[in-house]
Structures are given as structure tokens and as C-alpha cells.
Amino acid sequence: MKDGEGFGRRDERGGEAMAIGDLLRTVAAPVMRHMGFGRSELVARWPEIVGPALAQHTTPMTLRHPPGSRARGVLDVATDRAQATALRKEIPELIARINELFGYPAVEHIKICVRR
Image 1 (cartoon, rainbow, N blue to C red):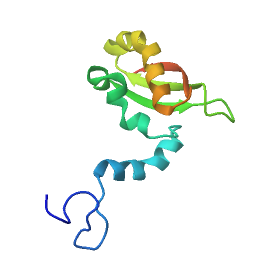
Image 2 (cartoon, rainbow, N blue to C red):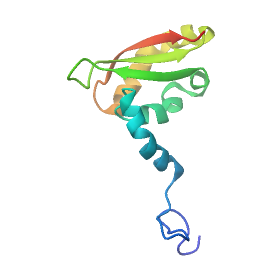
Image 3 (tube, one colour):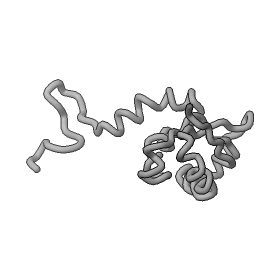
Image 4 (cartoon, rainbow, N blue to C red):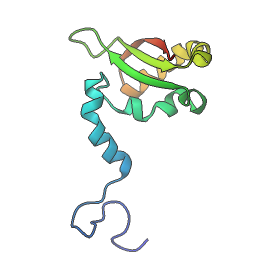
């Protein structure tokens, strides 16, 4: 790579180049907070959390916490009927992975919402 190429380089318009993932997190953060996702990493890293097979059939919808708390929340996850049983079996492990990602017990329960 030559000097001036890669991350942190300036483009022709004089602005700083930015990785698309960083840009999407910046733009999506206010929407994610409105949906209850205080940290958009949960949505951005969903395939890593649940694995590629479940990620194709599941979507984190909302993360609700008790009033005045950011812990012990309920995560609503949409899935199709065929994957609901597989997802249900993974709930304890998923809660552990999510809480590890957040660094505190952000999720206490996962509610499965079957898509019609």
C-alpha cells in the first residue's frame, strides 16, 4: 500500500475516509436507541452471537429494560416457526453471549416472536 492509501486517508473532497461499518453504526445509533438497543453492536454482531445458521432466520427486534435500569432486559427476537425450537434451546447460551458483549447483565430473558 502506498502512502496516503487505506484507512484514515483523505479523499478528493478533503474529507476523512471512513470504514462503512463505522459509518453505519454512527448513522444507525439513534434509531437503535429508539428501538431499545442502547448499543447497536447487538444488531451489528447478531450473526456472530447466534451463529450463521440462526442469523439467517432470526432478527433482534427490541430490547426492553425495567424503568430506570439498563440491566435485566427482555430481548424480543423474531423468527420463523421452523426455527423457534432451535432458538429456544439456545436461549441460555445467547443470553450469556449478549451479556458478555455488553459487559453487564443487560438481558435476562429472550422472548421469541414467531413471524407469520
